[in-house]
Amino acid sequence: MKNPHDFYTARGYENINIKAQGLTASMEDYLEMITRLYQEKNHVKITELSSALNVSPSAVSNMLRKLHAKGYVKYQPYGIVYLTKNGEEVGDFLLKRHEILSVFLKLIGVKNNIHYDVERIEHNLSKETFKAFFRLAKFFQDNPTILKKYQDFNLSLEEKEY
Image (cartoon, rainbow, N blue to C red; front, side, top):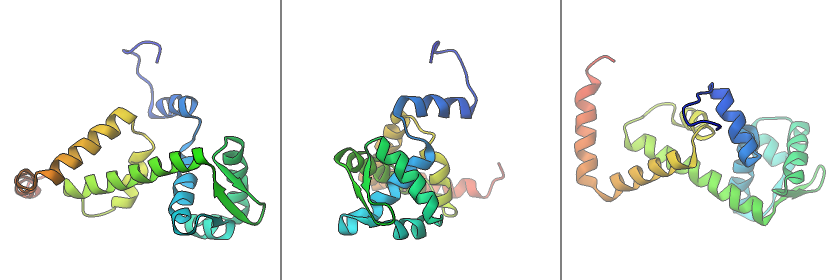
């Protein structure tokens, strides 16, 4: 940002983030899913990725070309996808970010639509905010007495309308 007092739309911040790290939300989703599937057998078939993401194989091929150009994957057209070292590192972070946000939402009492909410949140967090979520989730996990107090407090407010 040019000036810390400048404000942008959500899309404006997203564009700034894309320029800073070079990955769109869609690219992150693909890389996260590739990492999830990759952990099982150190490679992913394009058809498996297509099925897991509920998209066409041609859409997968298009995205793989982009991820390959950025150095995240190696792949054979209509074949197998491999993560590069950089792809593994970024993919591991994306998967960890997803898992931590899921845990955090559960800890604060979210019961429904967790996966949907995580998908909406994860691409729009700064690293600083993500780290704060991580620290708070870890704090709650390491302090079950405080977590219980929060959960009791949260239950007492559920009766009230917002």
